[in-house]
Image (cartoon, rainbow, N blue to C red):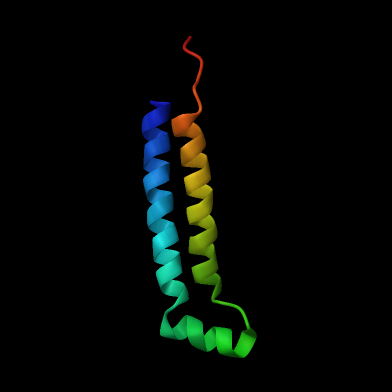
Length: 68
């Protein structure tokens, strides 16, 4: 069960990371980055959430657990 949850988190994390990287290069993010020097909060949230999902999913999937 833990591995299934880990794989789901891993897949969701990859999807969020790709979506965040694509939204970082959108027109609105480029305008925001021109004036503030930073990409939009939404793009950064997707990227950070994607990285967290990948790390947590990888840990749950690839770290062996004890069988009780």
